[in-house]
Image 1 (cartoon, rainbow, N blue to C red):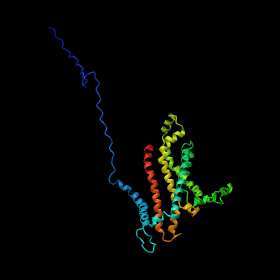
Image 2: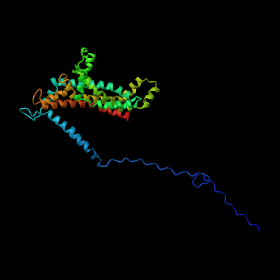
Image 3: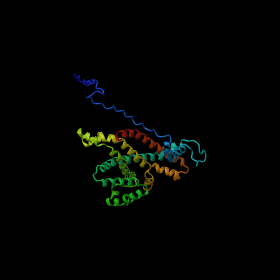
Image 4: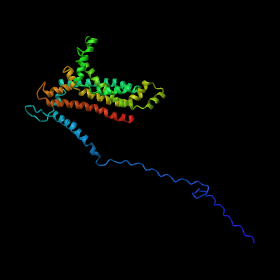
Length: 322
């Protein structure tokens, strides 16, 4: 008796849908889950306490003096015979008339001129230092600029009197007096201010020059732009807010300078800082303390007007240099 062969089961047909159980089909890896974006942690409620020392210092060092200046500028001086402490606009009116107005205009002219010259001279010096191959030279110039930018007052006045005064070494060596040179004039004071304003501009504009990207220069070269065209159409428009910021800083430094001018030229060149000192000390008239506060308020107004032009442009520059 013959035994029938056991039937072999036929292989299962491949699933046309390509399911995971179908033979001969690669199993697809599981889909990657979308990564969740990291959530920014907001500072805790007590984080603002870290700013309390700064705010307190600002309030004591700037806020209270500003309030005292504004209040005193519109108040009758306590040295007056009658009406002391009452409201008046006479101080502010007198501060923009006669010799006081002349001193204010002279201070603005001197500060604007020296700030402009310092800006024009400081930018090429800073660019030359940055592009120099000698690292030692760069460090030496920046270190010297930091020292000279803070060199002022009586030492600076003595140095220039000994060098470019009527009996100064350079004055006698080159006979500068015969050519009309005088250190004790508006021009001489401007030259003296440049001694510390140009190094200050070098320190101020160096970070902005470092922010200029190399790709911008290469793109200008690819478009057959010359070096002057690159600076005129690319670099200077980007640097303009930073240049204006440096100009504002130099203007403020020259506008508030007192010791150098007082020791070197005295009352030869009328300056608002000298007028404030005379009003406080009573060299001209007694009881002009509140007039000095009005003159100080005029200086604050000038500084605020200059800053109002600078701040909007600084925000525009930050977009390119960030």
